[in-house]
Image (cartoon, rainbow, N blue to C red):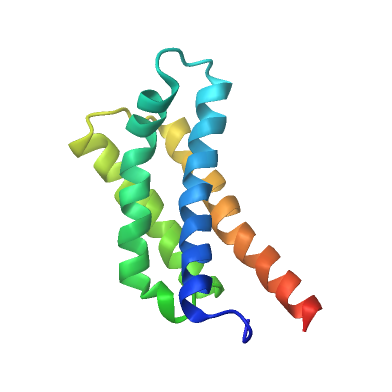
Length: 126
């Protein structure tokens, strides 16, 4: 990590968190065989969670240590809680209990998972 400029490291980490949400949405839409415009449909589902990830970055001050488990946990919990609240109250979309469970587990696996993989890779290359 010491060889990677801080700005690039933060952009990669932020991109990985946003990508985690996009992959979550893509898998969900594919699983449910959703029709219509792929981009518009995905944007409607992803928007509250993408906003929540950005909020999580601000709350966690993730730019200070974007690869840590603590940072990831704050971003994950913010993505789930704020994302579901935004989805329900602002975007007027459903928040059925099975969706809450799947979103919580999947976003945890993706947001925390890439961090673990990155730390493992960086430790091996040092």
